[in-house]
Length: 291
Ligand code: GUN
Image 1 (cartoon, rainbow, N blue to C red):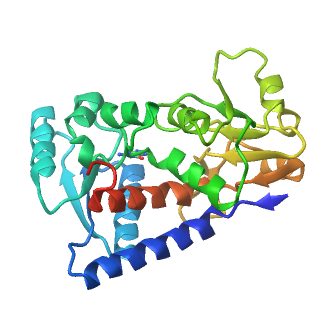
Image 2: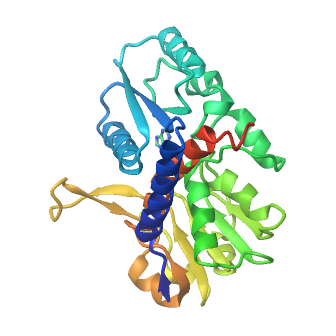
């Protein structure tokens, strides 16, 4: 069994990005710039956005945090988005989700210029990805694909079972894994799937993206399978300073001995998700997706 060290790979990618930024600077170019809009003061969102800003600093990107109060109107937020769409000095931006109930997430996402949509959530980017055009790809699927590449994990002709059909993980990953050149045979299972355990037990590559801690047990995993655990549920813990710890969807201790490769939680997919936003911002700055 080989542990997939997402933390190490993400660290390597950050160094690669940092080098590119230094080259851009040395050549007199403009350094990549990412902005995040944060509405309100939700604890989780505050933490995630703080990490995103810190990641930018680490690789030498410029970053901007734009705060709006909880009672910002949808119109005010949409106006702010249009301003950012038109800001020449800005390569990409994200609106941290979730948003307060009085604001439509879909309207907000559709207001972002696809060329600056480094989250890859806009329908234009999702559509372009589906038909195989260059596009911004949402961070977690992008990060998982990068892990397959960097660990030289073969996907061609493999049976891949993705647990969960979310817009930002399961569905886009199913498209990426089945595209030409990657060539996996993909099954997406969800809450209404019959015989879920048996389907999972047939997987050469099993991706658990349910947000259901400890759902995947050893009887659901084939001997020699590759297991990717996307779950990051916060559970209370008296052993950490923060008072919680992250728990994956996979019962790691019993599943790991059966695997050829497995990602831990934390330290597997999570760091790759974070670094993918930097990757997308660099692609935006270099005009690699929309030239
Ligand atoms: N909330 C949780 N994950 C994400 C993400 O990847 N992007 C945005 N914008 N909000 C999130």
